[in-house]
Amino acid sequence: MQRCLKWVKYLADFGVEATVVTVDAAQATYPVLDESLAADVPANVRVIRTTTSEPFESYKKLTGRAVPYGGFANEGKPGLVQQALRFVRGNLFIPDPRRGWNKHALRAVEQLLAAGETFDAVLTSSPPHSTQLIGLELKKRHGLRWLADMRDPWTDIYYYKDLHHTPLAAWLDARYERQVLTQADAVLVTSPETERLFRAKVPGLAAGKIHVLPNGYDAPDFGQPARPPVDCFRITHTGTITELYHLDGLLGALAGARARHPAVPVQLRFVGQVSAALRAQVSAAGLDEITEYQPFVPHAASVAELLRATVLLMAIPDVPRNLGILPGKIFEYLAANKPVLCVGPAGSDADNLLQECGAGQALPYADAALMQETLDALLRQWAINPNLDLPAASHGRYARRALTGQLAAIVGAPAQVPAT
Image 1 (cartoon, rainbow, N blue to C red):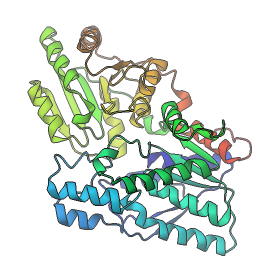
Image 2: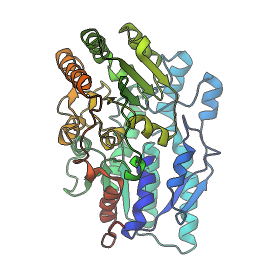
Image 3: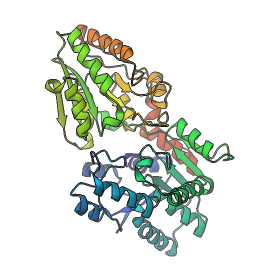
Image 4: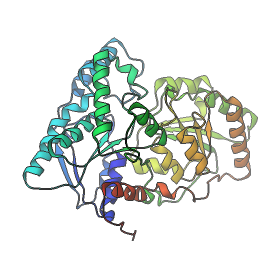
């Protein structure tokens, strides 16, 4: 959501007037809401909110659980009812249950066009990938220039197998994916590996059709000063995390590092959604006494948590085809100018980015020696000086405003307007 939000915030700086068509939050269902981010929408941007048709209220009534995250991070171990509902979701709601919004969004756009309004381009962003079918339909009906922003893979997303598709449903879903890739005028992706994935699926795509436009950070969000603690070595993770991220190796290495550096008080802090299984891994490593769990907080408070950390923790899920997973949070981690402990595959896009910016490197899931070496070095540094903040230098090209300028160029906007 922040990807589109920040584009809307800065597009006018580059000569692009945006009209936003979205769902009325009062009629939709989400795992979490952060109303504070609405302040980033410029007052002169037109926002059209529509009704929707979604099945998630029925899901909540049947399971007694909240609306699931995309990767089921908040479902825990699925029972028979949840397994059955996953089958229904994977076979009756193709590409996904959010498709019920499409007819309402299309109606809103048709009304604008019928009133004589003209648009140079339409941009659809997903997941949910059903949103791409809106762009596909508008392309067919009106020939509008269409930019398909695919923040995540489609039929290769790591939890795809959990949807229990029948062969027919999988074929139809793959057909939609191929139609989007071939018929969109431009495809935007967040990482080089995702571009390679899509090109392998659909050979023959034009050389300049896919654009790598990564996520980023918004510089004004980081106007407050950093305040790393002086009384403890604080490792902070923000956002959703589950056992799929394979943190057990790092947790064990952290327990060992504490034993080797008893004079350094260590604190582990999770801010956001943490699965029960991951909490069990923390307990198994003997780290309960140094671990804090905080629930979801608004974005500004999340940024403040980053700035109050000594080092930041992130992980890439230990799933097939994870080399291209480049979480949006990694850019905010870079903007916080902290060392980053990243559990994930070496040579991944996340690993390359961290090394490019001098913030760390990937720690492979089973490389206990590298984890211990990295933690020992950081704890020794902290014992000398508890401020391990990095120089702010190498991540400026990932600022949201600069990235929005790249989007405007893809749209075909006039020359860029300098920052004031």
